[in-house]
Length: 254
Ligand SMILES: Nc1ncnc2c1ncn2[C@@H]1O[C@H](COP(=O)(O)OP(=O)(O)OP(=O)(O)O)[C@@H](O)[C@H]1O
Ligand SMILES: [Mg+2]
Image (tube, rainbow, N blue to C red; front, side, top):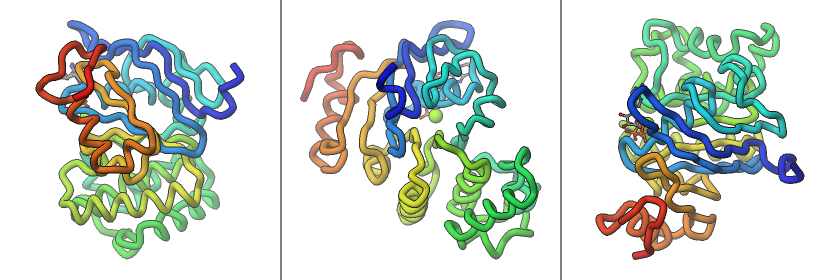
């Protein structure tokens, strides 16, 4: 595959089902190395299921290539070690553990000196949590907990970050702050990421490419230009998620 070198992640024909029927149907997408792509859509569209399947956390069908290697049959632990870090939605941190211990959890397989260097790097990106290291993570504010969850993801030294709705439940000011930090991290580390969001506006702060998901299907795509402008994003929302939306696979433009 000649494209493999420029794409850190290639997803083909990915389907996820939980018992009853599929909730993700034949998804195909690519994430270019060093770039952020986004998966957008409403509640229940299948965004988290897609992300979790890529992390190896849901049984799925289809082909996944990471850095040119077929990882379709790898366990979640193998994918994690290869450099795929998943940051779950809802700031899933361990509230009873200290901030420092939560960070350590993200790098359990890394030797102590490297872990210390990574922690230093994370704390420089997120000074808000740097002086709260001994505090139980549950005492942090919502925004700080999200920073901790992202920081924990960074502790593994990922090559691909899977970010599930980092804006969920945060006040607009905090969303802006979390996204500002993510932008700095992404730029400095040339990190690739696949970002899940309901908010087109938030996703546009980082992503240069996005897909719209509806009822488990990818129904549309936005390029960097469409994402950059409010009109472009609104047009995509009207076209792909609006009330006039007909068949998912044949969305008409508004
Ligand atoms: N573990 C599960 N068992 C059964 N059904 C599930 C499970 N997880 C998700 N689903 C169903 O799969 C569909 C897609 O859910 P998913 O969490 O992927 O959506 P989402 O796009 O992430 O939504 P949200 O924006 O609300 O997080 C939903 O109908 C949901 O009820
Ligand atoms: Mg979700």
